[in-house]
Figure: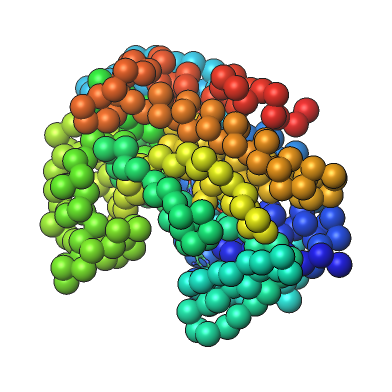
Length: 399
Ligand SMILES: Cc1cc2nc3c(=O)[nH]c(=O)nc-3n(C[C@H](O)[C@H](O)[C@H](O)COP(=O)(O)OP(=O)(O)OC[C@H]3O[C@@H](n4cnc5c(N)ncnc54)[C@H](O)[C@@H]3O)c2cc1C
């Protein structure tokens, strides 16, 4: 039986492990985080293509998969509704999807607390070294270790992701705690606020325990806000002066940085969103990054998910990209094409998705680049739009 060692036990790693296992491979997922990843994460967009892959794995995809939307609306700065559009979309919680995948993988195929620090490959196989001294060998090693991938650095020599010039401030407010002023417009529709330099959006997501009952859900918000590299450096530095270049844990964000963010929110956002930010106990942020890898395979090593391509969140495709990449990899290895057949799909798909997401977010950069106009209707139409409408993607999508 061929064997695969998968580095990273998040969405891409779990999809890959489950699909390869289904195809007759012996798999082991090595995840660096010792704790339960499901305790982290917020809201996330979905695309029907990821559900095709989940169904192939026999995972249930029904009404309980997330919150179903039929409408999006856009607020003006004074709080008036200035646009309404239909929107057929399912939004869910990252943790809900993670749990479904993790529960489907037997525990003996998963080890946590293993951080990859080195790898060697030759004609006989590939060996991974971990920070605790563990060494593991397999026929194939798959880097599903995210945008700051160690596998990409060790086996491909790069590239590093590039910072887009803006961050996404984020938060989740329990539905029961959503202020009255925000309820009529934001509890129900997918909400937006768009200016020439900013975008705020919000949507309901499953609550704790994947609860979809009215009153028990969460209201997830995301504020794309121009932030210079110098400002980002300061945001990623904790109160003790330690810099966290790959992302700072929410509790470590300096109180002064949170206070400055809250003051900017008060000055810029409509009243509904100001109230939502004020009701958020623990805001956090993620720098917006681009990554378009020129190669996703080398020898016995392959990259999947964000380790291969990082598209800005405007296309809401982090999960779908991980699912499709894992499926193409499993199919390529089951057929005669091998890793070359995987790369022939993953590279053009990833490049087209990254390019589209850069185009959608170009107006948020500092200075703005030519791209989508920072106006309500174009931004609403191009946020989380169907993958089949994105130039270059249709030939790759499952029926
Ligand atoms: C805990 C968590 C919560 C998230 N929550 C959200 C969310 O709410 N909304 C959203 O839009 N996106 C979220 N994301 C990111 C996102 O959805 C990703 O696009 C999606 O998970 C697919 O990415 P991925 O599996 O390729 O990479 P990631 O999700 O980034 O996972 C990479 C995994 O590799 C592990 N890893 C990294 N380096 C090493 C190493 N050297 N050795 C071993 N393991 C390593 C990491 O710990 C991580 O589990 C989250 C990611 C994580 C890890």
